[in-house]
Length: 372
Image (tube, rainbow, N blue to C red; front, top):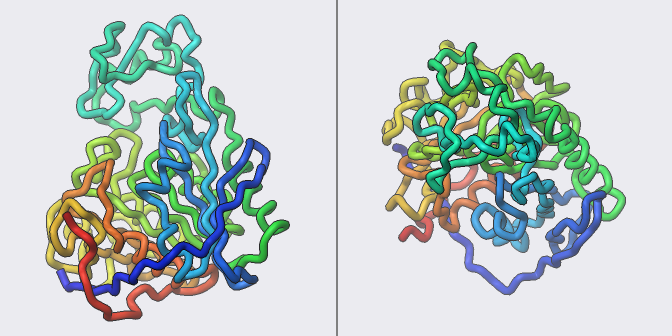
């Protein structure tokens, strides 16, 4: 790896304010920087399944950078499903359990982590998840093979109501009636179910969002008719030891590299097997789950000493769109992130406004993150 040394700022007393606004589904937490203006960026945070806004920002929030970098942070809660867990209606089975009252569904369970493909069972060993649609719908799924053509989607839109793109874009539109902000600097960051949701925003709200930052999620496949109206910068972050949303992909879920090359195609980047990266990095370097020693690197994980995150940026992109992968070597679906995580993400965000080619590598500062 070629190391990018980054400065870790000294933390001072918080100056930003926490406000609450109802954008249609109850109060939403908003962090407002001191001295906000028409040049202030907005970052929308989208939590994962069964998570919530308050817990999400403890692990993935960027609030430590608000005072120094001056941006808004908006953290809404998803809807609550039939099991009492919060979710977003993204695509496929990237949503909630919305039909557990079904008599057919209520007696069947499956392995939520997809570590192995199992036949449906009426017995729950304590680690399994209840089916949220009639078991008959899965007749051809759980006795299945690995051919993606045989993988049937959970009927997310029909069962959970496909209203979350409208809700999240509505937040941004209403936000402009309350605060001044930079319309070219609206960004969305989500993890897991939230990552799939921000991919949907990239597909259907490209006129609003300058970038999406999915952390361990997958974009809708081609047959979902993802049609961005204009380029949207992409930063996909993924731990190589994620055994919930696999780095290599599984079933209908694209792996990290395929997600970047697939969505990067909407930005005019090189795609598929012909995709190339800057700095002469290759598809094989990006897909290798260890340290490929062939790209620039960052330190954002506490679980790995020193530099742990390889940076792969697709080549051949349009002048106003980019597609980048941060491969976090050794991290899981429940990452332990150090202080450099927020510093680096905010730096990337502020260097990727709408309509520009982006420029992340502008500093050569020092220090590792707080590993350990």
